[in-house]
Image (cartoon, rainbow, N blue to C red; front, side, top):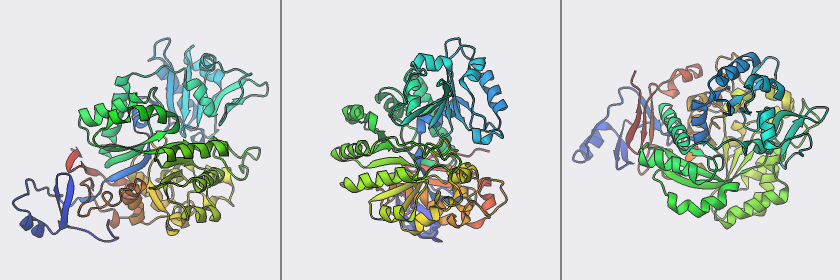
Length: 517
């Protein structure tokens, strides 16, 4: 992956680093006295270790151990799963669910709080939408949070109300925080288990590292850091975690940062949300939604507030990582960066769901990387065409254009919001369609080549954190993190990508996953 079409026959690794690549004969002769172990790939193919540039590591583990609603294809199926879960809870326990998506339902049904009341048998309910920018709460949860018809929309959020002014139970963005604050805190053991479950699952998918944002969702910031220390340091589960720091957690994080210098864990940019998501029509657009002309989405911060957060990052010698899906959110973020540019490194623009030619030109003048999620194309189309209309669709997730314009792109999943499998992301990047669909792809001119698709998960993820000189390639002096697949992605049809199996995952020169069957 140093250049397209370049392969090496063998690699000599020592102390977690690549010493040299070349032929087996040459390396065996040159390093005969230092070689302790020789590993035959047996016709399998080794790549630089796949790194997910955007996910929520503990949240992904929660999805694996909690009620997962993301695969439900009807409201009836979702209701049945909720009722079944209720039967496993004690009388005071919250019913928590992850990942509902009404766009998967034929009738696009969104449950009302009264319907959740009838399901929950008096228990409070909080269900996160797949995008995590919308939530459903029942009457008991709203009561505990003090949300009534008199409660105003908080800044950056919407409490959806009916014609009588009563909350329906649907909460967008910051409005959900009103309820989240009264959900009982999970235990430290739960966080440890969620993170361990997550890392082990990622290893099985060939993922050697990930850029995550976990520090503001589980009470005091030390709690998730204790989970990282427990799983990665004490249990020695090698995984390269790069942690963004949510701006609301920054003060507490700075107080204990020195106490949590954990092997394989590093700390990165200040995380900021500028808007919501397309699914709930909370992504902030410069023009109204095509299918809901009464709204253009939600701005999380006023211009002055966003600029102040950027200044705080600079004062702490940090880059920023901004969630920006709509074009208006992107413009606001670009304007803030121009007024307060980074002292060093690169800022991160996350998702970049909708652009235009002027915004692309402005991004090219900044020290930024684009943190893109190919899986969004597979999940958001075709309904995204309804949201944006045909005129704007060519500028939605335009990966080909962004790369052709010379912008650095890193590839992630946004798990648990989307499936974490990098092969699914690669498939989406090169086909721009869902598995099994028989068409040329959604906006097919934006497809990436196989080399580009793999690169965003390897060298692209390295460039996102200014590590492109040490990570993301199989090259002398680079870290010995590898993903071994049972066939060559460059020698197959695109429809075969999802049939590929991970054989080994290797971190720091050590095998952390091996396929056994």
